[in-house]
Image 1 (cartoon, rainbow, N blue to C red):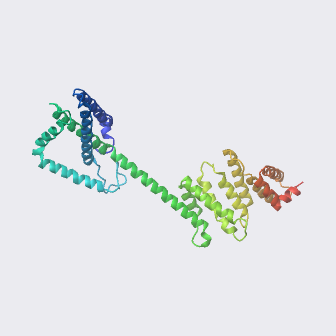
Image 2: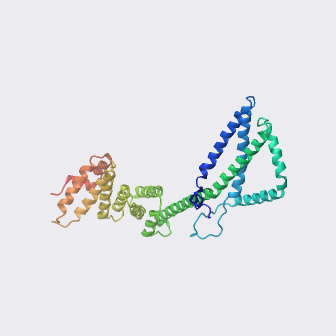
Length: 368
């Protein structure tokens, strides 16, 4: 029978968690019946003493049962071995082993003195339990019964439930360690990317995609905030635009990890970075801003009309690059005007409309 594999429960003994406490409760009823037969002057003191004796006996028996039932750590087991395997500190097991051997050894040596000892124990409980002729026998039965129940309960718990608890604790700890390792790896790789102009080699896009995909949601938020800070601090100055461009692979990896496509700000920030790099990619920036707007509207987020104003700017540059008579010019011009109209309803987006010379030129001299 393997420990902790549910075999006790499968063999019909799984109800011991209820049966043993029920027997202990029934014992309290027996004590109450016994006390009811005593003279009123000692009835309740004897009842309280009996409960104290039962509790002490159960505690001692339970401690012994726990020592006998502590599971052993699997040594050198392969990862594929079924059943619980623990890698925790084994000092408690060693102490349990020593104490168990001591108890067994002393018990065997002193077994001849057991009967006289039990007799003295019974006599010592006679007076506290009411001083009746049956008090000694009742007290001894109480001690043996509750010591046995305590032993059985904690012995079975140690064999059946403790391995599961230890295994669960080990699993949770390993999972937390794994998550912390993944978080550290992700943040380290992102820092390498954002600081690659200062020295060292930048990770590949595939490396960033993989490490961010395995990171937790909270870690991705930290990564986004770090990349967004770098982008927002460096997009205006032509000298620092190359630093700003380092955020593009990070935003791309965050988008790749967002399989549900719920985080519109990833698309928005990537669109801004593509627009503001030394050589703007107007088409890719417009596509990302369109995705940001679509996702924003899908999740019901309010504001963020800067996406429309920036998309209008991208479209203006794309319009200027069209060949004369291009069939898509009219539709593109209409979309630009719609974005400008939408952006004019937001105070932040309106500031961009009023300050950007290209947008002001479009508003002042729209195409015929």
